[in-house]
Structure formats: C-alpha cells, structure tokens
Length: 229
View 1 (cartoon, helix red, strand yellow):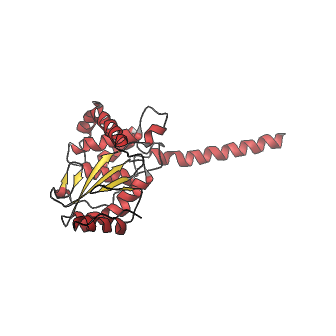
View 2 (cartoon, helix red, strand yellow):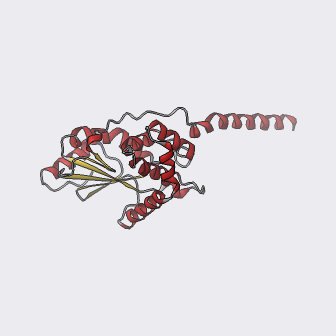
View 3 (spheres, one colour):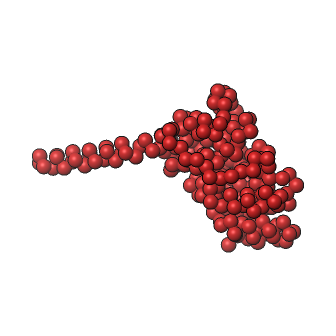
C-alpha cells in the first residue's frame, strides 16, 4: 500500500511538473512571435487591403483563435498579397466570425476580445500589424493565448498607444460590433472558419495559393469562377 501511495505521489508530481512546464506557454507575454507577413500598408483601408477598383474581391470570415485561419493568414495570404493585391487585381476584405470563444465557459471571450482589439488598432491605422501578430501568436483555442495581458503585449509589439487602445476596448462598443458581425455572418450562412468568397464564389476551409489564384485569375478575366475542388 505504501508503494502504491508512493507511485501515486510520483505520478501526481509528474503531472504537476508537466502542468508547470506547459501552462506559462499560454500566458507568456514576454516572448511573442514576430509576424513574417509583409503588408503593403499604402493599400490598406481599414480592414480592407487592396485598390478600391480591383476587379476581384476576396471576402474572408475568420476567427483569431482558429488554427486553420492562422495557416491561411501566415502561409497562403502572403502569396495572394504579393501576386494579386500589389498588382491591383485583388482586394481582401476581413470579416469577424468569432465562433471559438463561444465554446468556453470563461466570461472573457478570447475570440471576441482579440477581434475587438484589432478593431481598436484600426483607430491608430495599425489594424493589419495587429491582425498579423494575433495570427502569429496563436496557442490553441481558449487556452489564454489571447487573455487580456497577452493582447496588451501584442498591442505593444504592434506599436500601439496602449492608453488609447485600452480606452477603446473599455467602451465595449467594438466587442458588440464583433458579435453583431458574427451574427450577421451566421445569418448569411457562414458556419465555419475560414470561409471565403471570391466575387461571390464561396470557399470553405483552407485552399492553397495556387487553387485560390486560379479562381482569382478567372474572376479577373471575367470568366465564371470555378468551384473549389
């Protein structure tokens, strides 16, 4: 019996050590990842990136906690920006679909608060910088990656005036706007992230830059946009 209790104690200590080793990762505010995404800020207009007269519009509904959205933002979108946005063919419009936080019992909805923080960054013309840093610093879903302290650290890294940014978030107006846009997305049939639309052709889930590029080029040529495979 003593040996049994000893074994249980060792297991418990091991669990505690594992927890101690992993828990800080989700709340670390001092070791943030830099974003590798290069955004042509001269083409940024709020949450829209690209020339107003671009023949193709890519609407993107995403959640900052969604890992597949992170893959799109970090691995696919940069190629689309380099190839189509800078050439004047494409404009990208971001929309909030803050779903992941609804699965948490915490009163602090990380999806909503991250999106609200991005909207407040918009007031300082730093929306895209903050947007990219959020995706670069995902750590699971509803695990503290976007708790208040970490959101503030990301805001600092993005170069925001923290006092003004905090004041914007405190009103609750941007959180309400995120929830309203999410509700509108659901009403329009968006129920997964990322969901995209290329001149009206809906794409759900991750696609490669080549696949999306073929659709963008068809739309730019005035041809029917092929359905995603």
